[in-house]
Image 1 (cartoon, rainbow, N blue to C red):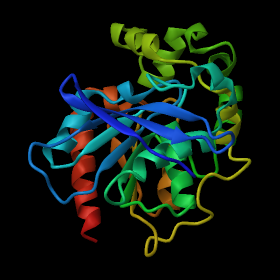
Image 2 (cartoon, rainbow, N blue to C red):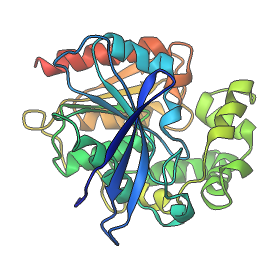
Image 3 (tube, helix red, strand yellow):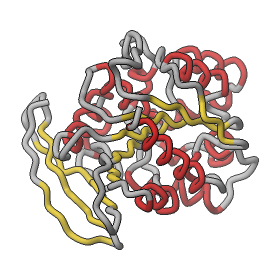
Length: 298
């Protein structure tokens, strides 16, 4: 991506907020992206971590109790909102954005860092991470949480259409009419593995923003976003982390991703799709940090 970057730093709620301009390849317009950085008290030689959010979310979706264990291990942790999400600009054109636009947004952050970062992608964010792997961008390691399989979501969409038509219909509503027209109860079941819309679930949906309908198409896998194959001797280490109670990305889907990346799966017992909101979120984050450190020594 041809781009120029303007970083402006200011303190915000105990962390550093960076607003990054990223150049759009199509018309040269620049957009300010929401970008937060949490740093450890003592600097280390560990690579930066960049967290990539899922559909309809933003930087806010990674809570402090998920970020803090990584910071405690010495990592600098970045979160960002793709264009049209969170506090980033571009909401007026949300219906036009494609997966490649979100990839460009992440690249604008990665290219401003002192070295190749570690990517921690969640859901849609795992497709962004896999696209960067496919394009052989410099990366230290990749963690895929609740992952979109390398071949895409087409088989999952068909399975859901037949096995859970209400969930399929509600996902279609989210990507056409808007996220705030979705049944919170169905959303709670799919994302939080919960039978009811708790206060936490309602707060989550109140913060969500509408998603580009193009993303559903891009994630189907008709145009491949992942590498054609994975070679652990020449590509960054990859780990798959998934909940065994995820109602959206089922264990068989996570297993498929783990086999492709020759990593297996780190299973989170009773984990939902939204692993960073589960009761054991900080334990998951702590395990991820220790895996990253081990993988860098390989």
